[in-house]
Amino acid sequence: MAEPLLVGAVAYTPNVVPIWEGIREYFAGTEAEMDFVLFSNYGRQVDALIDGTIDVAWNTNLAWVRTVLQTEGACRALAMRDTDLTFATVFVARAGSSLRDIGDLAGRRLALGSRDSAQAAILPVHFLHQAGLGEDDVELLRIDSDLGKHGDTGRSELDAIRAVLDEQADAAAIGVTTWEAIGRDELMPDALTEFWRSPMYCHCNFTALDALPAERSDPWVDHLLRMSWDDPEQRRILEMEGLRRWMRPNLDGYASLFEAVKQQEIPARW
Image (cartoon, rainbow, N blue to C red; front, side, top):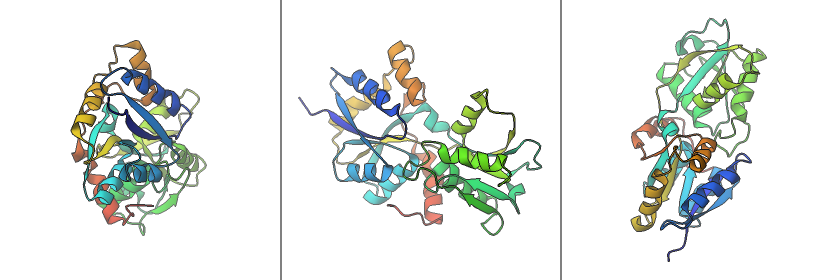
């Protein structure tokens, strides 16, 4: 029998452990058994994937871009969440603000999340540039919370929101999932408004090197895609990981981030 597939994930929150224990249990007794190993940050996880310590990495979009760049494309995306296909960045301001569109940020102060967060820092700058705005036009307040986690904890986005509420910034750039979570929080005052939303892009994916044989990865992916929302135990795992079903990847959804990384000269490895 082949060794279990070893999957890496970053421990950005305590519930990562029960999520991956549940996923491991889901694969137990199948032809695609797996185990997992947790990392403190995405840099170490990408290194582990490239040096062969792990077989598959549960990567953010920035970790995917960096894997592609470091391997000169000798890697492949295996699967992603349905929610990873429809990710977006949202610009928010205080309720009653005169901001109505991204172009209105000229002469204003924009709070950004951690510099390694695609949704809250890298892509927002990219979208500003597409709107004809540079750092001479918009003052950027960068909040580097939880570096190495690629924005997974959401802490820097909440810090950016706090800067807006405290009137230290006119607007904040946050991921759509953070914005939706705020909307579900009954304790959050109705103090913010969305004034611009980006085109959709892709977020996380399971990444493997081309060197991983298809006869090892294909059964694992096939079984992953069969995880069902209709099964109560499987639904519990899906809910914790923030999806309803696993999907085949859409690589076109990473084009904007590849462009942003190149234009901003973000290194392939930190």
